[in-house]
Image (cartoon, rainbow, N blue to C red; front, side, top):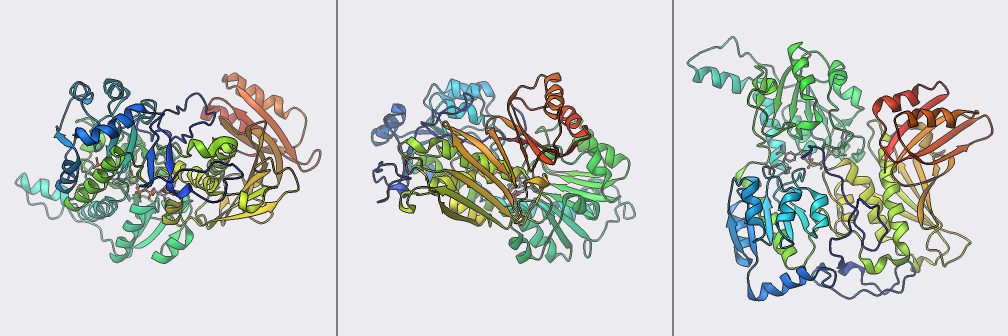
Length: 616
Ligand SMILES: NC(=O)c1ccc[n+]([C@@H]2O[C@H](COP(=O)([O-])OP(=O)(O)OC[C@H]3O[C@@H](n4cnc5c(N)ncnc54)[C@H](O)[C@@H]3O)[C@@H](O)[C@H]2O)c1
Ligand SMILES: O=C(O)[C@H](O)COP(=O)(O)O
């Protein structure tokens, strides 16, 4: 299975979704949405459902059958990797628990059709084959930890299987392991231990380096990164952090300066990695970026192996750019026994132990057991990874606006650059409806989902959206502007402003200094209608290339030719300009992702002053 984080799904039953996104996860009803007010004018009144959410039986008869069967026969939970006792005890109260560790893929497939739930850590691959072998009986997969790289989410969703994880209980353990690797690497603890056990006494060989007064760059200032920063400051280190999306005030509270990527890597003695593996962070540490580092830098990775180009790291270790590395995670786990990286004398390795403390595993076990039992009872956990985002009942007329809100969030966050962190997010709704008929909770949740999911290992659903935003320090404010139009149409436009940020695409910055994007729904399809101060009109589907150039003839043809050489299909194209022959923005929708070389060719067109590629 690819090491990249799987694409996250915004499953909105009833919404016309791209063919690749299945809608077969059962719809849910949410208690929070029983409101006296109509939802954006919709006359739907939702039934009161308790607890928080209940899986709709009619869409998934096997789920209702399972719920009914709870009364007469206990469900079976297969625990495929070691789980803390407290979690097992919780599971046993409600189900038959089969603890079978180290199953081969064949053995797992053979057992799975007898199980209602499966609990794993990162060592078990829950592939499409597993879901197929389950023959619709498997209702929930619980990942006892954060990363769900080992679960085929798409297949889970297609088979109507809910996936839940336990995203918080191992944070401290991972941070402590980062610090353990930092200190033991600096003092050659592992190497010296191996040497003594081999009968040697090499005091001169294992002289280390001190930490006090040294600069540590924390790359990714989320849950784990901020805890590492806090601890490193206690060791007397000067700590800086790079995270373009981190709230600036959280960094200030810990006394950590947020800096740009280049500044972080070029001035630091130690670099500790705490970002998720996403298409943007994949191999972000490569020959080029190692080349910018201070000679003799030391690197710690307890995040994901894939953020480092491992061959490039071996080269950097061999040529002395990197003095030492301490690694808990690898692109392929377990790595090959003869891996040059693992065998390198200046590398300290541990077998993905970040979450492996007694305390964290007890916490994770309880968190996942509660989520799995809840799911088997028909509840929706806040940690559900592929839960339906929007109840079908409230979608009706809102469907395209829900998609628009998420796409605008995804688009805006991909425009963020630099190191200052996001200070605030403002969503501006322009509508002819009375505010009482404009309940924007789902739209705000979708904006949150769009902003957070591409940059983190967190999955946002309707239950956890506001909480997740708050936890990450993302302040989302809303503003409504009355539009003198037909109240039949729920919204005229949605505008998104991200404040206090730099942008990869300077033209996306509005006069007020915010990243600004606006969208509208046209003929039921979400469109991007404004980028910064430039009016454009491009359907928000597939991928998008934004270019700024001096308005002149022939530009569309030149870019079109470059894309067609690589067989990249253009779905839409629109040019917005300030005035003829002045600055213009070209927005090009493309079905396929162009190769880096193709994008470079576009950037090399002399008239193009800046451009950015965005995945919607
Ligand atoms: N080794 C282990 O056992 C272990 C245990 C727990 C977590 N982890 C891993 O640690 C990592 C961090 O986990 P977390 O719980 O802190 O996640 P998190 O989502 O709380 O934090 C990740 C942070 O990275 C930031 N980020 C995203 N893209 C970035 C980029 N391009 N540059 C800089 N920062 C970027 C996000 O804004 C976010 O603040 C994840 O990869 C997770 O899978 C590993
Ligand atoms: O994603 C996680 O939670 C960590 O990487 C820990 O994985 P593990 O549960 O397999 O130790």
